[in-house]
Length: 256
Image (cartoon, rainbow, N blue to C red):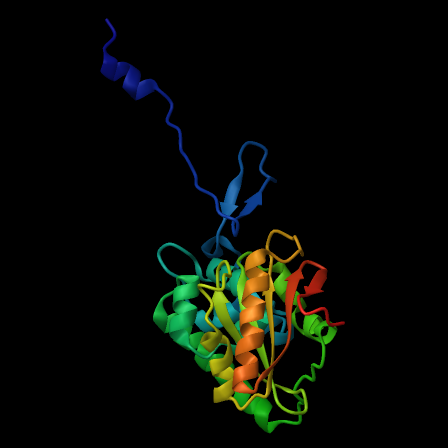
């Protein structure tokens, strides 16, 4: 006589796996797929070993960020976290962010890791400020688009502000807001406060459409009207508001 326990012992077990976009699926094995995580990488392919063997210039931005962060969290290994940070925030925006709390909230990363990133890039900015490097000059929407083109690849919508001096040099670059933009959510003071703090006389704002549609929405138009009016009151010119998508942009003020 067979008992239920006998069937339980002989039934094959199954395993379930949860994949995310940072996992690498290896299909070389003939019978199964395997999820390659950071801990599974050969030592020679890990960022710390690569920087020693191949040199710093051979590392991607995500790999360099992973060296700054050093370790990940229980939910996310360090390389996966670094790749996500770059995808969601953007390289230029990350390098110009000065508030760790903003970075921590926007990317759902521990505050001490946000502090590490902000401190690292602040060192770079201070060195750059003392070097012979020249700040970017932006006078129109086309030049702004060339500067902000990587925004078109971001998966989250963000509003960026480029703050210019009287010679049209970028004196500050800031992520003003993350998420869907409406005139009710984005207040003019959030856009113009950095201009006052950094002595800017003109502003260009830009936001991305992850959908790829370049046409402005009613909310985009309403926000632009509010910012133009606020800029006139403050004596700070809003040069343009552009929408950036992959390979395309549009000017809401009709500037070339």
